Length: 74
Image 1 (cartoon, rainbow, N blue to C red):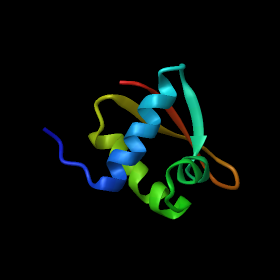
Image 2 (image 1 turned 30 degrees about the vertical axis):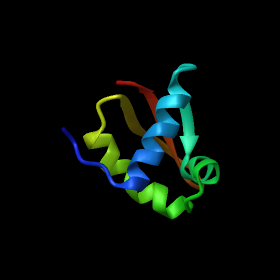
Image 3 (image 1 turned 180 degrees about the vertical axis):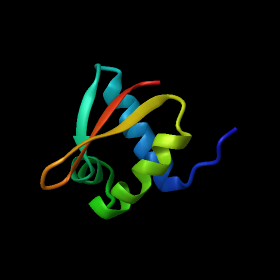
């Protein structure tokens, strides 16, 4: 079983809930605003979660002014 920090669990819960409605494209700031973290806290954890998470697939999608993440069911 994979061990997650409290922040990672909060991010995963948000993403898992988001993808129940289908594929999503999100930015760290959107997640951070919804769960009470900073965009930097979310942005540093998403690459690690992309490797560890089984429930959702997290893919770095694009980088304009900030990184966009593509999230789908795992």
